[in-house]
Amino acid sequence: MQQTRRAFLQTGTLLAATLPLSQLKLTAAAAPAEAPPAGGGREVLFSPGFIAERKNAYDRFEPLIKPAQNPVMVAEMPWEGRGGINWGSVLRSPVDGKYRFFYNTDFPGAQEGAVLVDNSMQGKSHYVVCYAESDDGLTWRRPALNLHFQDQFPGNNIVFTWPSYYNDASTVIEDRHDRDPARRFKMSMFHIDTKDRDLTGVCLFVSPDGLRWTFTGTVLPAQDASSIWQDQRTGHYYAFLKDRRDGNRSRMLMHSADFKNWSEPSWIVTPGHGDSAGTNFYNQSAFTLCGRTLGFLNLYDLTTQTTWIELLESGDNLNWQRMPSQPRLLAPGAPGTYDCGGAYVGLAEPILAGDEYRYYYYASPDRHDAADTADGSGPRPCLAYATFRKNRLVGQQTEHDGYFVTLPFKCPGGRLFLNFIGREPVTVSVKRPGYGDDYERFTQADCLPVTGDTLRGEITWKTGARLDELKGKYIRLKVAGKNIVAYSAMFEV
Image 1: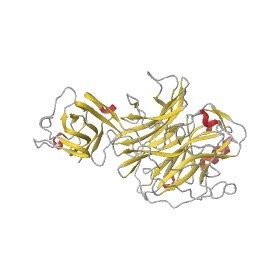
Image 2: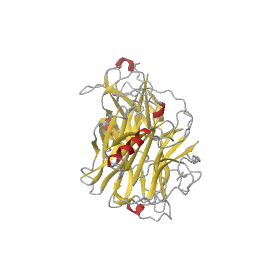
Image 3: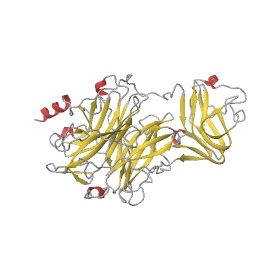
C-alpha cells in the first residue's frame, strides 16, 4: 500500500488545472561560479565579511521600514482558518511584472489524530497552499480557481492539498534556468506522513504554472520551517533546513545543481558564544545584493516567545556568518499591532520596485506558543512588507577621518562608481594585495574627491589612470573620508 501511495505521488499531478505558459527564454543550470559578474562588470558590497582593514570605521545597517499600508493581505475567506496567512513566497514575474503570492493557510476540518510538532499538537486543521496575485504588490486578489474543495468552499484559490497531519512552510521559486517548461516553478514543503514515514521531511515539487504540482519523489531530511532558494546567477539550488542542535533550533544547508541530487546536510547557523540558552534560529531566506549573497535569519527567543529578523552573509553560498553586532533589522511591532507577536521571514527574495526593495514577510499578532492556543476570534497572521532603499541595506561608515579596505579581488577593469553619502570629500585608492601599498597612479592623493548622496558617483584619478591597466590583477579598494557612509562599488566594463 505504501509503494502504491509513493508511486501515485511521483507520477500523478496533485492538482488538475491548466493556465497558459508564459514564453520564457531559458538557460541551462550551472555550477556556482567564483566572483560571478554583475551586468558585464562587477559589484562589491561593503558588508562586514568583505572588509579587511578599518580605521574609525564601523559596520552600518539600515533597519527595514514598515509602510503605513500594512498589512497588505489578511485572512478573510472561510477556508483561511485560525492560522491565517502564513509562510508565503511573493514573486514578481520577469515577463509581465505581475506579483504572485503562494501562502499557507488552514481551514476547519478535523483529521484523525494529532502529532507533536515544535512543542504543539498539530493535525486538527487541514493545511493547504493558496495563490493570490496583484498588479502592484499592494492590492491582492484571490482568483476563483476552484481546483479543490469547490463544493465546500466555492470560489476558493487553493492550489495544493496533501492530506496529512502537518504541512508547513511551502516555498515557491520561479526557475528561469531549467529548460523543461514542466519544471518552471518549484516548491518545497515540510510534510508529516503517518501512513508512509519515508515521506516525512521537506518534500520537493515541480509545476509548469504554479497551479498543477507534481511530487518529484525527493524528501530532504529536516524538520519544519525550511525553505529553498535558487541563485539566479548560476541556477544552483539551496535548501535551508531546520533541525536541532543540543535541543535548540538551528539551520542546516543542502545544495543541488539539478534539483534531484543533493549534498548531505551540514550546519550553517547554530547558537554560539554570546547567545542565550533561549536562542533559536527559526527559518531563513536568501538573496543577492550588489554581487554578494545575503540572507534574512529568523531569531526566536524561547523566553519571550517572540521572533525578529537579522542579516546573514556568505561569500560562496555554502558558509554563512551572522553579522558581528547581530542587529535587528525587522522587529515585532507595538502591542496590539499586526506583527506584535513576531516578524517571521518571508521565503522569497526582496523585490525591487522603483528605487526601493520590498521584503514581504509573515506577520503574527501572537507570540509563538500563544498562537497554538488562540481561539481564532482575534487578529490572525497576515502578509506585510518592509522596505529598504535600493542597494542600501548594509555598508560601512566612518566617524571623523576614517577609512576601510576590502578583501582582495580580481580587477574587472572598466569604470568605477561609488554608492555613498558624504558631505566631506571622499576618495578611493586601489591597493595591492597582502603587504602591498597603493598601485602607482591610483593612490589616495591621485583620486579626485567626490561628495554628495548618490548611487553612482564616478571615481577617477587626476593621473588619467584607467582601471583597464589593472584588469585581471588582484586589487583592494580603500575608501576614505570624514563622516561618510559607503555601501558598495560598481565596475562597469
